[in-house]
Length: 460
Image (cartoon, rainbow, N blue to C red):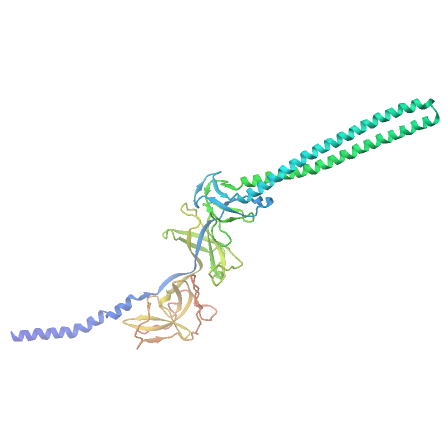
C-alpha cells in the first residue's frame, strides 16, 4: 500500500514536470491577454481619404416671399415684422404668411392725405380765380365793342358838322378801336395765365393723388401672402440669425421667407482652407442626418467657393461648399444638420492600420507588432491618412497585428528598421476634417500590393 502511494506521487510529480511548461506555453499570461485585446489586424483593400464636414440642408430652388420693394419710393426705408406664421408651416396659395408694422407708412399716409386736400383746395381756388378773371376780360371786350359801335355812328353823323367836330369824332373812333384791340389782347393773355396756373395746380394735385395711390399700394403689400403652396422657411439676416417677429425689414433686403422645392435639396457646408485644396467638383459624398443616423444619402460636390470668408468665433478662413443630394426624399427638411463625408481619394490594394497604433520617434514612424508571444518595435513607411486609419507602404504584412497602445514595459523590445528610409515631419491634422500625414520625400511609392512584400521579415 505504501509503495502504491509512492508510485502515485511519482506519477503526479512527473505530470506536473511535463505538463506545466506545456500549459504555460499554450495559455497566454494575463498581461498578454490584455495586450491581445488592445491590438488590431493590418487591413488590406481599398483605402478612402475623406474630408468630413457638418452642413445644413436647404432647397436648391425656392420661391421668395418679399415685402413691398417699392417702399423706398414712398420714403419708407425700414419697418418691423409684426407677425409671422411659424417656420415649417404648410401654406396654400394666397395664405397670409407675415404682416409688417404699418406705423411708419401710416404717418406718411396722413402727410400725403393732408397735402392732397391742400392741393385740391388750391386747384378749386385757381379754377374760381380764372373763371372770374376771364369773365371780367370778356365783359371788357364786349364793352369796348359797344363803345366802338357808338363812336362809329358819331363819326358818320359828324360828316356834315364843323371840321372840329368832325375831327373829334374821328379821334374818338380811333380810341375806341384801340381800346377794343387792347381788351382782346388782355383776354388772350389772361386765358394763357389761367391755363398755366391750372396746369401748375393740376400737376401738384395729380402728384399728390399718385403719391396717395402709391402709399396705398405699398400699404396693401405689407400683408405678405404665399404666391404658391409650400412650406414656409425663414431667411437668414446678415448676422446669420433667422428673421422672425420683431426683425427689421428694409426694401434693400425685402425677402421675409421662402417656399422651397423639397424635391431638389443640397447640403450647404464650409471647409477650412487646409482641406479645401483637396476638393473638386464632381466628388462623391456620403451624407448622414443628425435627425436619423441610420439614413445614408448620396451626394455630389457641385460648387466650391473661390474666395474664403471669416466666420464668427473661428480663427481660420473657410470656403463655402455646396453638395447636391442625389435623390429626393420626402423626409428631408430645410435646416436639418448633415454630416458630409467627401471622398477625395480612393486607393485600391493597400494595407492600413488604425492611427492609434502609430508611434513617431525621431522623425520615423513605428508600430508595436505582435511577434508570437512577444512584441517588436517595427519601423514602417506611411502614406495618406483619413480620420481613423493610415496607409502602410512598407514594414508590415497582411497577417500582422499591431498594438493600439504602447507597452508599459519596453525593456527588451527589439527595434526592426527599414534600410534607407528617410525621416519625415508629420503635418498637423485639422480640427474636424481629414488628416494628411507627411510621407517620405520620394517621387513615387511602391506599386499597389507590394507593401506586404516590402521590408525585412520580423524574426519570430
